[in-house]
Length: 348
Ligand code: 9MR
Image (cartoon, rainbow, N blue to C red):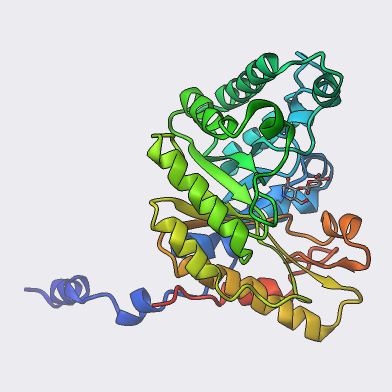
């Protein structure tokens, strides 16, 4: 053999350096982090901002391999008047995701908030009775899920159906349709897009025992009836003034043990203002612990943040004196939490 061929043969036969597989290069951004770990890392998106702000668009598409509409797929957004559908924003997001190779989380089909006024008023004044309400819900789910058939990886089918004390939320759905509305919603969604993963989604489920137990029994009950439910969404709205929910990974595992996919669907970590370096450091540990918890549970396939920049976050508008909950600041500069995420490793 000629020396060159021998050299080539040696190179080809040599095993990959162990370091290359055991310790992949540190990821340069969240997209690469997601890819190295085989999960989706997503963000909620404000579609008006997506249209208007080029820097926001650039960061979103560089960093995230999944998106959720922060508001654009909610009922009041898509059917503000009865029978009048406004899909522009939702369509725009789905199209932007396609162009940028991002998967989409659909949010949300059945909720007690952000319902159109025609619906809530009609139920209150009795002009919409229970039979009609059930048909309206079925049509809403069918119309929306069908519209995005094949384009939505996962749907938050029912959102926040359990109260803090573990009782079922007294929404117009429970009051007028009875608890069976949950099974109906999943069945209708499944019929409209058999490939979409169907989730039940809630907040404080990271730690609130009564909520956890009730949600587990809802899932078991649905499974016993053969209802197509595939995933549990933990919203993950955290604050550094509260302890990190230390048992979260175990809670995730209890749902995973029922055969569900697990997702963190709305992660953010708020703080009491003003921002200090110490608070940012604490926030960084909350974000990285959340990702570590997800990675420690095989069934956890997604971590979505509820907005990625403090320039546009729901937090200051809802919690007086609090804010700075996102990974990037108002100028889109990465905060310590962003850097911390890039160093997270899947626990062995
Ligand atoms: O971030 C959303 C905000 O812009 C809306 O005004 C608000 C209305 O209730 O909903 C926010 O998103 C919520 C999500 O849809 C469900 N979980 C809680 C989120 C934060 O309130």
